[in-house]
Image (cartoon, rainbow, N blue to C red; front, top):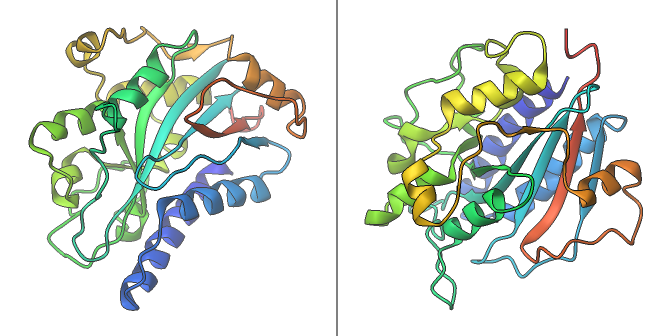
Length: 269
């Protein structure tokens, strides 16, 4: 099940960062993103389709991924995700509030990319985390599984939270902690919408990730009533049909890759 895969990847991420910390070797977020996407695909080959576009110059600029979940009723929900990794020495996410040469904040760009397209996507940040500070990550937010520190290894929060933290340029784990959710909850916690996984994910998003209508309005954006759709972008449909097609393109220069996961009828029970 995808739930078990997400949990295991969080544990692995926490462990790998711990190893890197022990030898003073700073890993990069794109390393974890690529390996995690590979692992998801390797463990669910019949349910996962992926496409990596021309590699962007990531570094400080970052590069977004899109996750798309679908069910057998052709209902979809999409996510636009930017990943950040903790700095081993400072416990900060150094480039969380990165601003381009044109003075555009990365977070605002993520929000615009997620919400201005024909099919809106949930704008999230994924944080790769490990800490030895016992005062941090003490409030467990998952109601499905018992507290497990290492399951914070991959955690999510709304891009609107990052935008709010930018007012004081807060970028430390201690600043983000109150807003983090273990990423496995997105696909594991079943108490949000009955039997259908897409509705469950949608309801989980609504209950746990801040969608700030005022902040959206300041950027000229609108938050949809629902992120569930039956009309995903054409490039997503093309990937679903044939991920090996080299003629699949998107004009989105910030999109590094796409992952599609299809829930089968057994998972919808």
